[in-house]
Image (tube, rainbow, N blue to C red; front, side, top):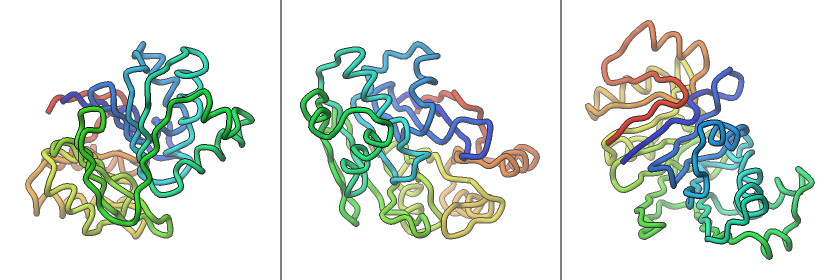
Length: 240
């Protein structure tokens, strides 16, 4: 399984916001600028057939309309794209289209072949999503509810934005490698910190790739050089 971190930063950094591409055809979150990053690297973006949304915040959903317009309106793509996210994700995407003065709901339905899978407030395993097994895991992102992390093919875990919680531990326990929110020096109810990541590594003895990094956290992690915590640049690729 090929995994690329399109973005590793938080919203107020020079790095792209957190975004993960798996095998070139399943992507976790589409923050602002995602489409441009993919096009700069000459990806065949029509390979992306599944979009996993961790939660509704704009730095995780902002580029979905731009992506959909590019593949369906510009490239005249016909095949189905599956979007999996919290309950209400379809309405949220329609609202974004409206905010951008793009297509309305009727035009989206007529011209874009989108299948939505809206998650209730529970964990769910979805099999055969474009040949993938996707597990959604409830996590804790402050007042933003519901928020989810995901496990893909029992191999790669992505926590999304979350404080330390049972859901995060389930993701780390059941994945070979986890891409984990490491925003802060010390974690809070919305985001994990270096202290939380140290705890997870000590308990589960598995590698964690830090993402959603603030600049101060990135620099501290680079200086501390903690075993099994990987601090990488945007565009980092690994195989698992």
